[in-house]
Length: 221
Image (cartoon, rainbow, N blue to C red; front, side, top):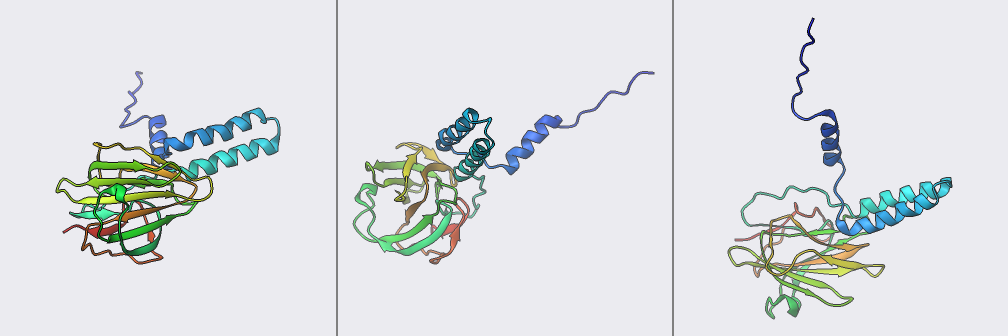
């Protein structure tokens, strides 16, 4: 008697498992790969020693967690400006933006987000648009200005923390970004300032936690 054909619906089991892993485990920013690789390499050389093996695996897992870039779903509200980072709102005020942003000399609404060593280190584009400015000071902050299709400018400043801080900027002038897209990273703690258009009404308060790419800072009129 002939065997009934096996009917495969959708993906194979290995593909399904890989898909589940991708859905559960957040991807890692490329800047974290050397750190994870270094931790695993140390474990390989000390593999016959249980303590070295365990330390290596724990360190690699922790570093992968630090450099994670969780998938985010930005709001679909027209004109929404989202938080550029995960963290805690440290300041909501008006301040003159750095000259590098070329946003003028008048104070603008500013939201400062403090990113701890346990938060995802990545930063995200608060709006969709074109990168108009990328300015980096040696051993200093990195300033990025993004302009929307309507000509509205948002300024961002990445500032590294005092301990082993290092800034990575993945965009260049002329690049097009979408809202919520990862555009850079500051490792081991940082602060990210967002300079908003004059008159922006900010719906956050000091001490509130933000989710990068999802929490709304303001809505452009």
